[in-house]
Length: 222
Image 1 (spheres, helix red, strand yellow):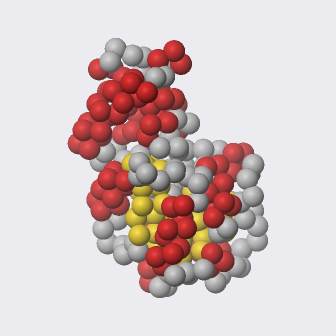
Image 2: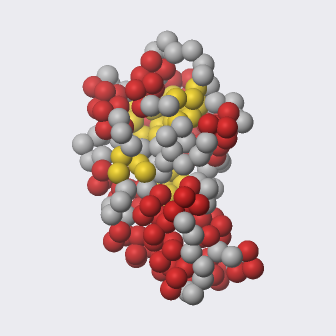
Image 3: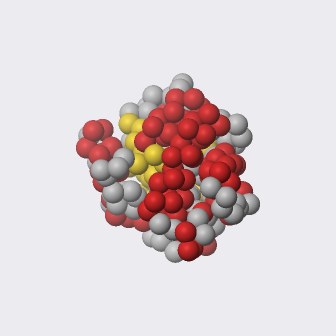
């Protein structure tokens, strides 16, 4: 039986792509650089914000200096606009409530920068007792490095085989594989089912409700 569910944030718990796109485009526009359609950002995110900025920059402009310039413009703008269009995916609040009622521990392991992760969880999910909420920190390798998951496991005292990691991307599936926990890919996020299928994910689900049977190992592999 699963005792701990660790969630990715962007594309898994929250649909944040419109606010991420608008904030990055704002920074690019301030630097007189080309902007991108919101849909493109689904494939820019997932490896931390510096990688997001690198992907959003024109190929010939992908320097450390430009990445830092975009970051400096993005952070204050996003801090004021991260709630404009973002929202939990349908069924997510209900899923978290059910997990809470069943006594299953909840945690978040995201590649979003740490402060932004904390703020979004506090804003959208303050009713739920996450045992640990972690975003990307400058001194810690981002996912798919397993450190962030291992840190949660160590603090919780829950075993790997009692842990389910839920995410929407290949990065998430690889993270679960690297950490030795069970992977559950979700198709409602930023990436495709095909991407999820490329990794050894034990489960792939189309709705939050489908996660519940997995907790008791009653659902067959997708």
